[in-house]
Image (cartoon, rainbow, N blue to C red; front, side):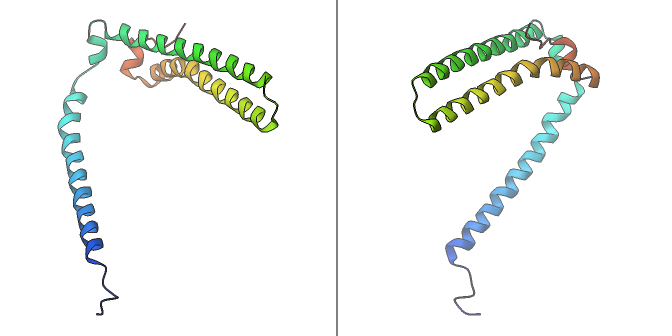
Length: 136
């Protein structure tokens, strides 16, 4: 075996270190999963049993949805205002793309809560039974 066939010393050390870190991370994840998941699975509807927590989750989702819709209005109006004073075709296309992206984000934000509530109830998820994620 010649010197050109063997990997550089630094490369073999970094590969070995990378494998040890990956192996220890995987073992830590597995141990944590076994220790942390079993007690959680044994509990039944902890979120629903907590006093005030379902209302706090619902309120947080409603505030987040309201802020997202207000953000859409601000972005839409600002882009429309800038679009009126823009002469370059490429900048106008970019602004229209930004408006479409903002609209898609707001639609996803508004649809996500009711979809989770309906789908979660159909699948029997415990959180969907006690938390109302419909923003209106």
